Length: 68
Image 1 (cartoon, rainbow, N blue to C red):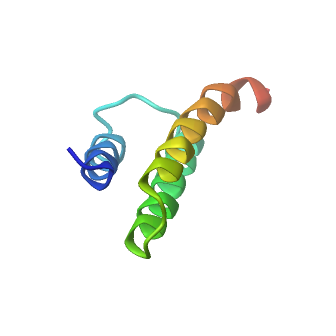
Image 2 (image 1 turned 120 degrees about the vertical axis):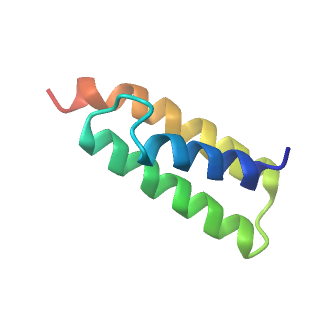
Image 3 (image 1 turned 60 degrees about the vertical axis):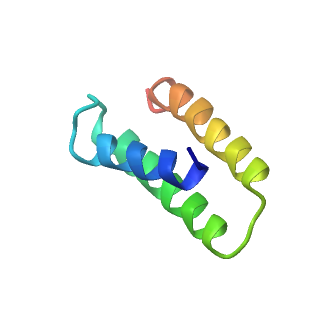
């Protein structure tokens, strides 16, 4: 499975709310997924974008605490 397929599946699950997330976190993740998908489309390294995806979810884990 290619990274772009993983990103599309994550987007689908996040956007149709099959994963329970606060709205601000949902917007953050969708934005990051869009950025990563765009960079892949213009030829960025898949390994670098995989790291960006991992980083996005790591940041997302910390966002609820940072918003308090």
